[in-house]
Length: 296
Length: 296
Image (cartoon, rainbow over all chains, first blue to last red; front, side):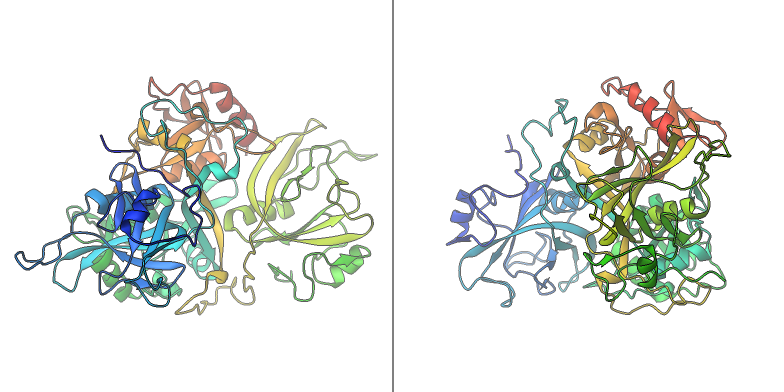
């Protein structure tokens, strides 16, 4: 029976601790395998990853890591094939959904700016902030992830809690018993777009009426930050309800010819609501379509 | 014409700066009025509040403040009346919607644990994390707010940006140009409830299908933290889609007799989906109904 994943810090192994080899990493309880980057379980999430080079498009910015999934690589005897969103690749994506922290262990094979000279080093907790798939250098699908350094991440108690046993909980909970699942940011740019549409969702036309006015969210079409590098400009932002914002960001929906489609089967959802004063740059929608809404 | 609000830090006035009186606070540009606690505009939000005692149920926990709106107090010649969610009270609620930081200036009249001995002191940026209304000590409606110390809050550029002029934006934005509009936390407790319903929204039955599984959010019925002090237990959590989570948290919806109603007109939305294994404590729903879904 698979061992339960242990999320968060492992006592006695603070950030900065070094290990001679993968055996030592495994012995310390930081990562459960001797080979392969991702440690986890598809139902629970990924508790740790090894960052030690591996894919030509991977990037390491210190507090931000662009990572690639496992499998599908061409070998001497087999051609490359699509990476599946299953097994450990799915586990890492699940972590993006739950917000659970991922231990990052850097190896000597990675970016010289951040890698240890030899062996491995535990570099703290990160969270998966994005996940998408795209055609890689071998012409096949690869699973990609962005992880960002977490501000402390909770030590999520897993013993017994992921079973069907009813968890006890706390009458007066501390902040440290929870993790961030989703964070929505606002800015002058997103606020302008939301005001333009009076909080009307450009996909489903809903206006969430609260006592304080209409609630909506600004969604960047081409994602901000490396590697997507979408601009923070009004031509790259949609006014969406929270539900469609989640679906769009996770690639369940895409836009083509000012219409909205479901990625799972390319079925039509409807026309995108577009104001004559908005000036959307449709190349951003093409980027999103290509990178976030690949065939599932 | 009303002056544009200036959000965030005022240069030359770092946290800790003291002021002899309200005149000095106004001269420094921290708060625009000589009387009254809230400074702001209903369309833009509240840029500053004075915390100096004022309402018997107000609380000051240092990094968390429970505050009351303006108006409606009984005077020598007039009886008490309901506080409206308009003017400065609406402005402070709008700040809860946008995530814009609020400057907090403490005066000598507040809680001895955190107030200056005399005069006023600027104590940094806070964000409005909750807003609700309830019957106060004078038997009339009062507007209540919870503010939490912000981790730095952006200096949101307001000049020209809140007009209809198309804002320029940035190709490579820095994190500091945005503020947190909404944050969703996950925990063992909320995850258990979401798993119980397989991500099905207990209000609208939707399952948000993403490539990684169903996305849903755990919503505490009776809010966590002072002054509501709801427990972090599964009997106090609903599995909701993001849209209904927003509506429920903001008091646009309420629950009575296992049915869901719109607070604006008490119209029926439908039955709440309830699993036989959930064990909801309906007293939490009664608390939420009383405090968050008052007549609007």
